[in-house]
Image (cartoon, rainbow, N blue to C red):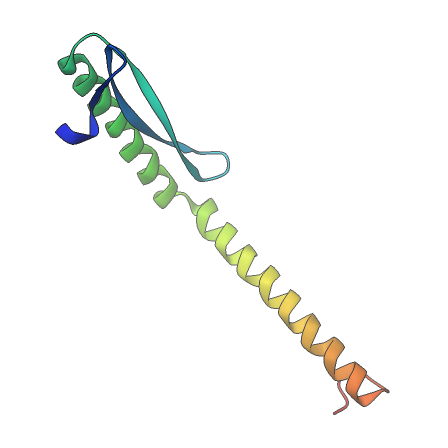
Length: 98
């Protein structure tokens, strides 16, 4: 953790990781302006604890499994519809005729 906190432009700073609970994305921002390294370490520890808590919320959320199932179904339907179109074009008469 020590190497993640750096002294840049007369202040201590670190990269903050955060989770957007609305769209399940992770973002990275630089947080700085700390007068001492101890202040930066304390703030980073608090932000890291919040990040870990937010990740656990996502993992426990039933919405994430529903979203995955929905994405897989959507992808599968798009893939199957392409196959059906190709079969239909080859046979010329019906979608299931080979």
